[in-house]
Length: 359
Ligand code: GDD
Ligand code: MN
Image 1: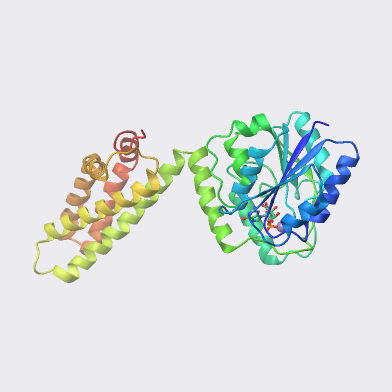
Image 2 (image 1 turned 45 degrees about the horizontal axis):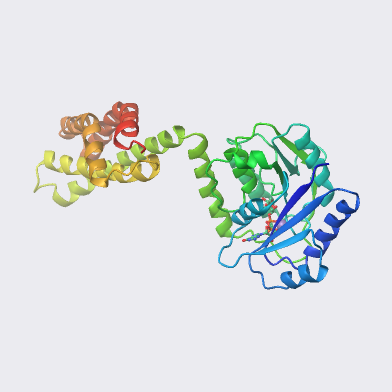
């Protein structure tokens, strides 16, 4: 077995660390070379004293003062590691140290990524997971599906070789799912799952907060933008277009009520068209063209207006044409349906390639 660096992120895990370090010590006692990097976020729960008292020269403790977060702690550990085989695991005893040699073997046999898996044949989860945590985990797993086919992409028990980790493109260490992040950003194709029994922690408490779950959603969006940049632009663009139709009909109804008798119909339609176009611009800019270059917002807006001028004119005239036949909002629905459909692909392509061109 090649020498391994084990990275353990911790936050208030002084109760669990002795068990973990004992487990790792017994692997060393079997003759395997292994060192440990604990990346602790200033827990102030006796972690420092505990590591010092044990006096194990193969255990290194890094205390981060100003930073917090599981993924960034893991990345720090990876950066500080020395060996070519890297394993990341939880401190709370959920991940069996006895699986580490299997993970090294999987890498040696050609995997570019390996993870301790609850869901592969032979793996299991200790009873006592509440329904909520279970559903939560299932939904999160499902959301990772477009990025990797592995059965347990949520796992935080991961193995990777230094060379693979270093080819990672722009790591975004947000939230909990550093494993998923590495699989996607290092473009790992041969991921081998090693079955583990996932134990429930005996000490301390989980740090899986609502904030962490929100971060997971943000993380999924970022991964989608990384792996499927065109689709992640087009889908929001189409949704913003659909929302614009609703806004447009709403504005027409509102203007009808507010200024129905005072202002000419064509002016009301024009106002609604222009406001809706601006609505679409603002959301498209954020959601569909997030990676636009440094061009100023005024120039982007001007470009956007030019690009969508034909569908906008169609929307305007169709609405106007129907405005004396049916109620105005309905005329607007027909007008914007035709206009939006006309513009959908053309507008998206030209906006993406010209108006919101990347630097
Ligand atoms: N340094 C640092 N900073 N460590 C942290 C932080 C942090 O902000 N938050 C959590 N940790 C450490 C914990 O101390 C523990 O060692 C490990 O990260 C996992 O945290 P838990 O709070 O035990 O997470 P969990 O049990 O809810 O989640 C586990 O299961 C998930 C799959 O269901 C972890 O293995 C996750 O990685 C995994 O995705
Ligand atoms: Mn845990």
